[in-house]
Figure (spheres, rainbow, N blue to C red):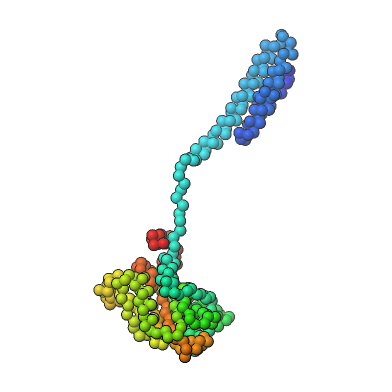
Length: 339
Ligand code: DAH
């Protein structure tokens, strides 16, 4: 009996448990009703009377020791639980940082929205284009300076393949597959080989517009653009069209709006003129219609193209174009409420 007690005492001193489950398993093994120590107690009645006292003391010691050892082990868990004491399960969650729409996306969506209400649908084309869509089909002469290496990114091994310099290439893509009436706008990214500064970048964004049908006139163009300007910049906005030149339109014009910062009185932004330029436009050159398989004796059309950065600058006075592509969240967050 004494040997059995000593054996169990050694086991008890050696008890190890890494977690509450293991500790409970030990309790069941040694201290529960059918555990090893109570079992020993049931054998107690077989102990000769003269030894009862000593054995009784030893068994009690064993039982106390087992309980103390279990308390020690429990305390170790309590200490590691205390490491998690900063876990406050009643605390509200950390605020989730939501992203914001990019200002160029906000303005692009607004442009799309305005023209959609006028019956224009969306079209797009690839950013990596070939010379035909960007230049030839748009009536650029072979020696037109816009084809120059200065402006256009070429692929070295394939000089015919370029990054589009304007979204006018989508005009040709659309006319290729669609017969008039055509009424589309084409937002997208364009690339030009320019030194990056606060006022120029090697890529930016444009929205192209194209309307081809029977009897389309310059008056239609002017009215649509006036409506656009007033929707975008406010109902007091005035427009003016100045004669200009583009290979793909004839006649061509550049459109100014009354400066939305000073209301037309003249300020630093409009350089004292009261007007700011926002887009190029004109009647689709009959050559362009013919080059793209549309009979210019039956159909006429107008087209326009605007820079999204330019419109965004006018709306939000962003002074440095580079801000649009630097992904500085302090800048992007400024547009949270414009979403
Ligand atoms: N493609 C011209 C540019 O990138 C913009 C433009 C001007 C587009 C006149 C047009 C237009 O459709 O009619 O500067």
